[in-house]
Image (cartoon, rainbow over all chains, first blue to last red; front, side):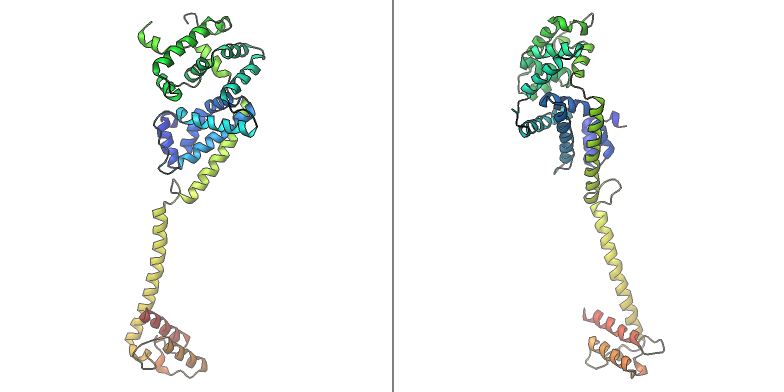
Length: 184
Length: 151
């Protein structure tokens, strides 16, 4: 069953022409790819284009000479693809291709909306950018600490300490109180 | 709090979910992306099936084996035809096919017989296929034999 197969197994199967395996990969990572594209572009319409381009590039890479061999997680593999596509999209639109700027603009837009999402957006917007990135990589993207260290080229100890600081900032913000469990 | 938890801190589930919701695609966006990627995937795998081996698609080796088999069958068929003609000629004296007596059966022998058949002057001894009459089939049989021997 596809849901029981690892990303690496599905990639191997898809590279061998198994359409079902590709479908399973897409279903597993669709929302995350879109989310990363949205964070990288700051615009929902561009995020749609970037997410599509990322999956098309994945399809193309499946047929690359020697095939696509996954040595880490698929998300770690896809992350730079999405980032680069987002940079291309920003350049095409004549904007500064800076993911951090795009994310802050997006959070600013969400922050003026009603509801709990707006509060979270404001809190996230208020975090130092290096802490914000760690929170997103760990708790939205689901990266392991070692993967984060590798992705950001940081020592593991630095990742841990920054993450602790970020969580302390989050927990200490009264706008986050409603999201905290009693024992949290 | 144990050391492991301290090293890899967790967020409350509701906060983690809330963060994820900030960037989640909307229903319409999911549908749009599904359609776009499905189209791209179909085109990709269709194109792949046309050029690469895969499920439901004959692998290269099998495709080439089929082609080679077809060529072999044609060659074998030709050889059987020639051989049957040769056998027929041998049965009735192959030497008779060498109409001009130059020591070999060639195109000229066939051509000569064809001309005689056209003119209606072919002698009964040129009934090389032994069917009781001298006609174009005899000229053709000699032509095939000439090609076979000449190759």
